[in-house]
Image 1 (cartoon, rainbow, N blue to C red):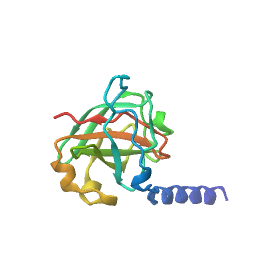
Image 2: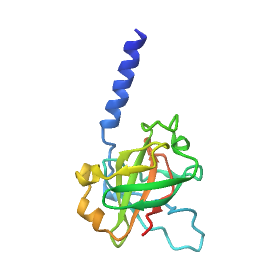
Image 3: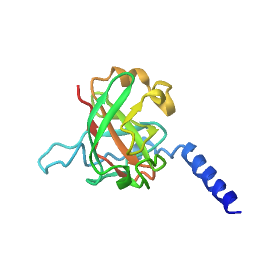
Length: 172
């Protein structure tokens, strides 16, 4: 009986990951107050982050200093990054290999703000991702807009949408 209950729980977790998170309408879209680290009170407002791709709304996620990324490099095939503080465990993952509690999010600069969202699940132990889902147009992604953008950025968000890393811009 325990095995059957475990299998049911695993199937339920799997199905939950397949369901897209509800996306709020543009009128209720919130832009975070933090952009790539702390802002001083005299700093200009952070550029807006529009969560329009990937079927996941991370707009309410609050940046945590316990999980920070940097050294982001992107090309047409994929990306790499480094943990500068913590890891996915600070966002809810139960181990370095647990990818079921955190999502990888990418963004491109459209001239007025960051556009993007979820493109894959991620764990602390894997610091590289391919862009297959973006290329395939996963939940509204435009490969052409992403790959042609002069600026791109990356962050990781807890699957419940409550916490995230900094938004780290990819180096040139």
